[in-house]
Each structure stands twice: as C-alpha cells, then as structure tokens.
Length: 477
Image (cartoon, rainbow, N blue to C red; front, side, top):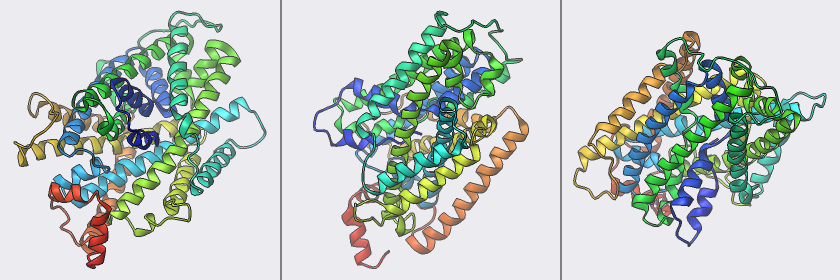
C-alpha cells in the first residue's frame, strides 16, 4: 500500500528537509509486503535474471518520476497532484477515471491484498484453530474504529516500521548472499527463463516493486533546493530499492527453491524460515505484521481524505465530504475499510489470487503513469515558454519512452494468456463503468464540459476552500 500519512506531517514541519529526507520518504513509501510477493513470484518464475526485469521496470519508473517532477514544477504546491494535472490537460472525465481507478481502487485493492498476507503470516506464527480471515477482520475493525475516532494509529511509528522492514530485507538478503544462514543451502539453476522474451515480460511483475515514489512530491515545498533534491531524491530512492531487492533475489537463490518461492503467499516468511529456521520466520512475520497494520491505517486515513477532497471538487458524491463529530470523513473510512476487507477475503491464503490482484492493481497504476506522461506533452504544447524549475531533458524522448514502455507492460501483463485476458477484461469493464459515471456526473452534476481542459489558473484556485464556497453560494453546485 502506497499512501502514507506522514507526508502530511512532513508538510507541516517548519524545518527545511534535505536530500536524505526525500530519499527516506521515497523508500518508505514504496516498500510494502505486497512488493515482497511480487519479488518472490518474479524470482521464482525466472530465477536470478529477474533482476534484469527489475532494472527495466526501474528505468521506466524513473521516466515517470521525471514527468511528475516537471508537472510539479509547473503547478507547485497543489494538494491533488495528478488529479489536478490531468484536469488542466484533459478535462474532468479522464481525471475522475484516473483518480478513482488509478488511486482509490488500486490502493484499496493492494491494501486488501496486504491484509490477506498479514492474515497468512499470523496463522503461520499463531496456529490457532480459527480461519485466517479472522485476523484480517479483527485488525481492520480496530483500524476503522480508531480512524473514525480521529486516532492516527502508528503515525509516529511508521518511519521506524519502514526502517525495520527495509533493514530486515537488507540484512536477511546479505545473510543469504554470503551463505551465513542456519538453514540448508540449496543447489538449483540460477536461470529459469527459457527465452529473453520471458524475462522482458516479467517487467510487468517487477513494476509493482517501484510504484509510489511520487508520493514524496507533496513535501517539495519543505525541501531545501527542491528543484534539484526532490527529483534526485526520488530517483536515488528507486535505485536503492533496486539494489536492496536484487540482494534479496540473490539470497533467495541460495536458500529458497524457485518453485516453492513462486507458489508462496508470503515469500518473505518462507525465505526467513529456510534461512534462519523458526526465528527467521517469526522475525519476518512480526516486522511485516507491523508494516501491514501501519499501512492499513495509512490507507484508510489517506484514501478517506482523498475521497473527501474529490467530493469538495464535486467529483464524488457529497457524502464523501461529510464528517463526524471528530472531523473525520466517516463514509470514506467505513466504505474503504469494507472494500479492503472484501479484497482481503477474495485473496485469502491464495498465492495465485494475490498475484492476480496485484497485476490488476498494476494496470490501473500504469494507466495513471501514462496519463502523467501525456500531461507533460500536452502542457509543453500549450505552454512552451512557461517557467519550469525542473524539465525532463531530451525533449519528448523520455515521456514517449515511458508511454511506450508502460503500454508494453500492460499488453504483456502476464505470461499466462488466459490470466492476461482476465486482467484486461476486469480493467476494461471498470474503466468503462467509471467513464459512464464520469460522463453523466460531469455533464449533469458538475455542469462542465466532459473533455475540455480546465485553465491552470482555475485548477490552482480550486485548491482553496473559498472556491467551493463561492460556487455553492451562487448555486453552481
């Protein structure tokens, strides 16, 4: 799960942040237990050469970081990010589709998957005679109730949890690389791929390992020399993640049979057990459990406020903007928590379903990244001389590479033709449904042209709450 509440905390700090803060924020936002599932399944499918697919996916995500940094330079300090960039370039309909599909649905789906991984981990460490989904239900009820009461659970611990997860991966990866574990070293082929095309097709799986670094952009107003440090920090964060994940793959090679790794619903726990016995299993389970609970809290909290912001922009029903006595957007908290539980129930204990849902979520997120590249090209055409504190070099080259490469990953999202068709079908039906909703909502509720770009000045004005009060007072909404 990629939405983290400490972004807002950092925004409120008066102290200027340095390059190190941007790097740590990017790394902490990207790493999640669902990433470990993608890492294990990708390595289990093709072996060590999965690192090659990871390099390609990382490079494509670097082009996205460049495009989003340029958009932020042109429209700085706005809270809606990609929603407002797309609104200024393509109009309300694509904005609603990309935000609801690419951020709300995608993050709810991935949070549900992570909750399923949490349940599996708990059932392995605490073998009580109860269904694993019970652990998910208890955890989600606690998180939902806490958020409804305005209690930001684990907010102060999120940085520590991210550090523990990242540190644990590096340490356990190095133990595996140098064969220092207490478990048995396995003998297996380093390369499981039968052709180069199989490795290239695995870039879609590797893509999930690097998404979310752009959530460091909201802290740009608090960063010293933001023009340089924000893009550089996000890029360095992705490179650090690439190195860290590569170390894990090399550790897998020495201690975890590829087939078992590919079929595991929690590869990090399997690796921990085979590397250091029951202590390694407990170690990874505890750290991953803390990480999942923390990110579930962040997801419920962050997505509820995203829904509230979209409702203020009149892009979602007004019930998403209503708050309880604690100032919490209660409908968003409840509906998002229930939706997460549904996805957790669907994927409960099934490595195949977990992998499938991660790939579906990847497609939604890839589409939003394609929109970001298109936004850059549109604004360069519309406002070629507008001042930009950061601009992606080499003209349209890197945005076009990002569009083509990301489209390729969507086309080859799975090596299984049937699974690929199912992913396309689910994504297509969802986008069509969102498109129909967006068309009628924009035309008859927002009373705005469906595909007409909104001037940048107006988009930036929409960040001010007085804008909505004025429109409501004049009976526009």
